[in-house]
Structure formats: structure tokens, C-alpha cells
Amino acid sequence: MSTTQFGYFLIADITGYTSFLSKSELDHAQQTLTALLNLLIQHTKPPLIISRLAGDAVISYGLRDNFFQGQTFVEMVEDTYVAFRQAIDLMVVNTTCRCNACANIHSLDLKFFIHYGAFGIQKLDNHDEMVGADVIVIHRLLKNHVAEKTGVRAYALYTDAAIRQLGLDDICGTMTPHTEAYEHLGEVKTWIQDMHPIWQAKREAVFLSIPPEKIMFAVEAEVDLPLETVWDYLMQPEFRRVLIGSDRQEVVDRKRGRVAEGSVYLCYHGDQLIRQTVVSWKPFEEVITQDLIPVPFPNVTAYIMYQLSRTEKGTRVVQAVSKAVTGSFLGRLMVDLVMPTKYKEFAHDMEKFKKHLEGDAVTRSNAPERFTPSSEMVAAAASESLQEKA
Image (cartoon, rainbow, N blue to C red; front, side, top):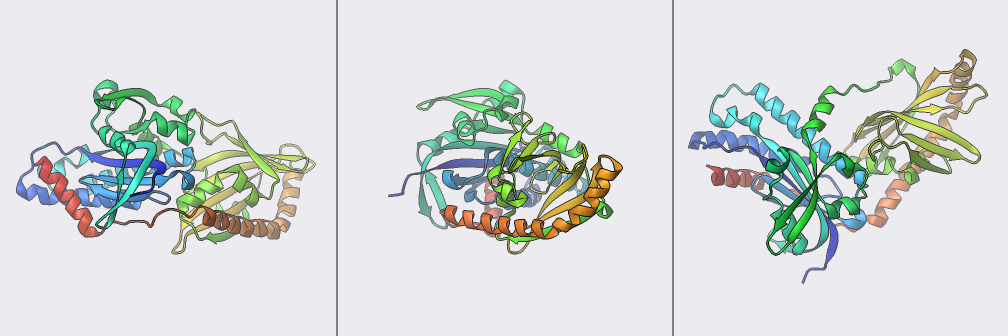
């Protein structure tokens, strides 16, 4: 008998091959779908755990008490979609084959289905099989009327239960409400996020960069945690304050419910308040804030850059401080002279941040062992999916 768990379900489902394919074309189609399934597997990061593959879909779950903030999860879904579209574009550019399978690569797309509820886990062969009424709900949602009712064909579908549990009430204001009805289940309220504008915005985005010669100093640490987990910690005021060395922090000026460019971290150091305005926001990669420096001259600011990168052990976190960028000449000169003396303080806070994250993660490490599908399993799933379509 499996123990009842509470958590999130995510199904990433590749769609688009509707043409009849000849036997020879199936080989080309399988190569494409295998590559795309591998991409989805690579983007299914802790605390998500892969349950199994189902044809051209990757099914995963995450436990409630060991999960991301709502915004981090939304950005992870968006990041996966962007990587998928980039892979499709690269395949289209690089193929010279004109068979139906290769000619239709551009028609492939991706849908996400997200639900929250109760479930049990049963061990079947070498994977975790989720069971329970809420598991039935998310699988029934794969058959829906979203495209015909909304015109959206590549989307993330969040059930209302997932929206509420993830705390996405403000963010879902940018989504389209939609209801499905199923026999024995009744109505299921959902929210639809169109993924194509996400991809288009990413392609057109221009981000601030700080030239190396403008950096005064940088400190870094290697955190023994996955990059996505470190990003999630870094964006939370209660953990971010450790890195900044402040007593407490809060976020104001969220944009459509999100921390984004223009949002402000308010850092309280005793009676002193420092405003850190987000000027560049690249999820899972980099954040740059423009910080008001507490010197006896008005409006003196400098950039603080936070960068994350994967390592063999976990994640490298780099915090870099720029020369002053605004304010009077004397104010900027004072910052450029005094700030380098703060290097040891920054390094100390970085090490404290690393230990704080790793310590907190230990208290949450109750997730089941991760399952990574073998290359044979991925190829078999792609083959099964195409045989059903051929």
C-alpha cells in the first residue's frame, strides 16, 4: 500500500506529427523525437522527479514540501519551452532532407499540463507510477478543447488547484481562464498560458551587460545544489538577505505578479534602507540590480551582478560589484575608493550564504530517488509514439 503524498504533477507533451509517414520516414522522425525527449528530460530538474515516459510525453512530479516558489516553477516551464523552440529552429536550419518527417519538424510544438493534488507512488519495474484520483485528472486534461476555444496551440495548462497552491493568483491574471468538463470528474477550472509570446519575447530581449573593466571585484562560491534550486533560493528575500548581509528584505513593485525588471528589493540594515532595483532579469542565469549606495551624496548607485553556472558538484554563484554608475563626481569617486575595502565582508557573506542554502536543503531532502530514463527507454518511447501515429 503506497503512502499518500501531496504535490505537483507536470506532463510535457510533444505534439505536431499528424502526417502519415512511410517506413523510411519513421526512422528520421524517431531521431527527431528522441532528441527532443532527451531535451525535456535534461530540463526536468530537482525537485521534479521523472515518473515515466509515455510516448512523446515526459511525466514528472514534485513533493509539496520540497518544491519551488511559484514564479520559479513558471519560469522553469518557460525556460524549457524556449529551449525546445531553439532546438526546433536549429533542426530546421541544419536539415537538408525533404522527407515528410524532416519537412514537418517546424510543425512540432510543446504543451505542458500542471496539476496539484494527492497521489500514491507504486514501484513498477524501474520507475515510479503515480496513482490516485488527481493523477486521473491530469491525464484526462490531455484531451481538451483548449485550441478550439482559445486558438492557442502551444500552452501551459495550470489547474486552479495548482495556481492556488503555487501562489500564482497575480501571475494568472496574464493567463486565459478555461474550463473542461469530464464524466465522473465534473468541471475542472484551468488557466492557459500561451507559450508562443514567451518564445517571441525571449528572441527579441536585449539584456544589460557590465563590461569587465567596470567590475571592481567579485566573490564566488560553489554550492552543492542544482542550479535551479540555487536560483530559487537566491530570489527569496529570506535567503537573499544572507548574501547581502541585511537584517531583512522585502520585494516591492512586482510586475504582473512577478519579480522582474523594475522590481525593487528593499534591504534593511538597522535603521538604514538600501533600494536594489532589478535592471536585468535572466532566469537561471543572471540578475543585475542597481543599488543606491549609502554615501553622503545623493543618487549614487552601482550595479551588483549575480551569476549562476553549473559545475560538476552543483552551482557556482558569482557576485560582482561595479564601479559607481550614477551620482556626482565626488560621490562616484568615494564609492570607487571605499567599495574595494568591502571585499572581505562580501566574501564572508557569500560563504555564509552557501552554508545556509546547503543546510536548509538538508532539512528538505525527503524526495524519492531520482529516475533518469535510459537511452533505450527514450528511443522506445519515441518509436511507440510514432507507430501510433503512422
